[in-house]
Length: 144
Image (cartoon, rainbow, N blue to C red; front, side, top):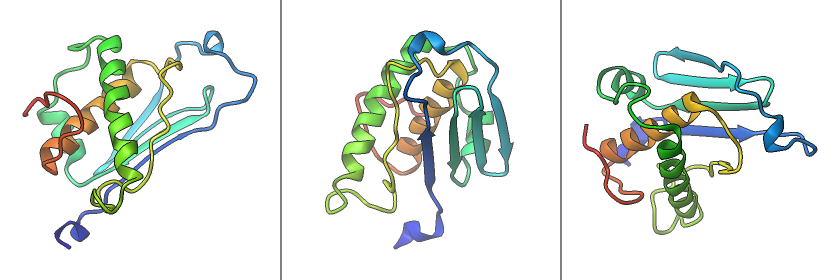
């Protein structure tokens, strides 16, 4: 398959303690590291990690994405929820959607405040993914 040349792994692991609540999440600085085509976001206090590995995403993010603070956090959260719901639906339908594109589900809880940076990177990955792989997850997709 043509897409076999591209390694696409989106990992979004949330390992939250059972006794935590939304009010227990402080606004802390996230650790963001980008090496080549890998973008990693981690916050040890909240015990989550997001890893995006996709050829060209980091370059696209730095050259074509809207700058940080262009969209509000609530805008990003709303869009991410819609995109992630459709993404997860497609993961569960490998006979209909390419399982090489939709490899694993994303655990995104709209009741958790992940902060601006996490939402910004997830939103921009979803835009990059839709434009690069000619997919439409939900609604209007900005072409950049």
